[in-house]
Length: 226
Image 1: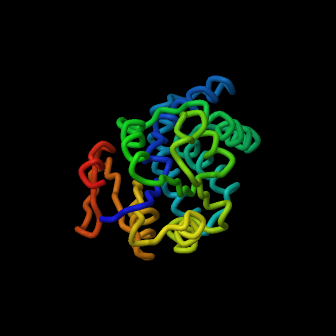
Image 2: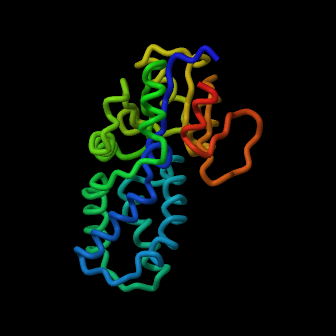
């Protein structure tokens, strides 16, 4: 495929967001004496969080609205009485503590070591800039990547073509010689394809896909294609 540059998404692709997020909530709920069963909270929070991130990608809500709204709706769903002040406090200490938990997906280190000897590796992420670099550093994978491009530094979010074109410019990469690897069909795969990049979909939830992208369910499967 004559690939020279590989661009990874971070959350849900290399960094196991759901596991690390659950550990963070467990810690801050205990610290703040929030009396809810974690599994019950997460059953509400996870789909709500996905909904809010989609709105955030589409520029329909602000970062502060995302941070507050996802918690507010989750507690409302549980019918748990909690003050706005406490929700704002939880939203802040959640972000402060999230990078303290750094479980990576199976095969992440192995595949990065394999790819590093053959390609230039980079990150393109919609995650909050102040957290993403901490995640990369504390999970001990920052050194694998030449460039880390965040949506906040560019001013737009995936799948906006502006962020992909910016990533190509700062890495001096050509679209047809670049591969985007990510877990989100809309943001990562379709976003990259619209400017001519090749793609690998990290399909951990076994979503139906067409033939326009490679699909893998384990990171080590990438070795079959690169």
